[in-house]
Amino acid sequence: MSRPDTHALGVLLEREEAARDEAKLAYQRALEVRMRAANQLQMLIDYRGDYVARWTQQFRQGGGPEILRTYRELRVKLDQAIEQQQGTVAGTEAQVQRCHQALVAAETRSAAVRKLIERRDAEHTRREDKQARKEMDEIAQRLGWQAARRAGFGAATASSSTFGEL
Image: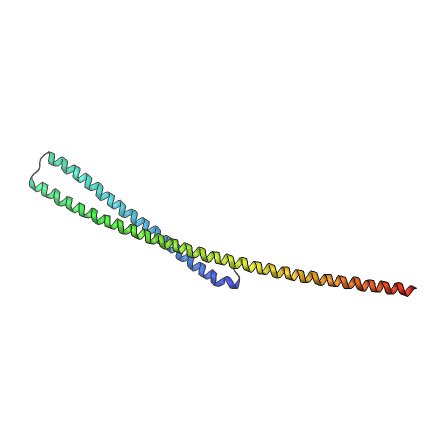
């Protein structure tokens, strides 16, 4: 990739790989946020279940209207908190999907640039090989002509000396 024709592509590849790395980090952060939100939701659901079980036990032992009102108020607040957290989880899921799509797009772009560089390198190597073969063919042809001239000159010298002896 040190060839001048691929230098700009090398710079582009570095930029695309940096963007891919950023997208990967954003995706990982989104996954972590989603996991924390889901864990918080589960904790709220578990707490509500424990709360209902505990108060159900309390009501069996008897309780006045004030205790019932307090139970209902807290139960409503717990239900609201759970609904809100479900919305948060849904939002984090949407963010995970957006980050995943951005990551796939960034990986695709960096792979495309890498492939283009490979194609350019292969084309450059093919042209260099073709040029080298052409030069070798020209050298072989010149050497063949030189050998033919020497052989022709040697034959002419040999024939003239043969004629000179007669």
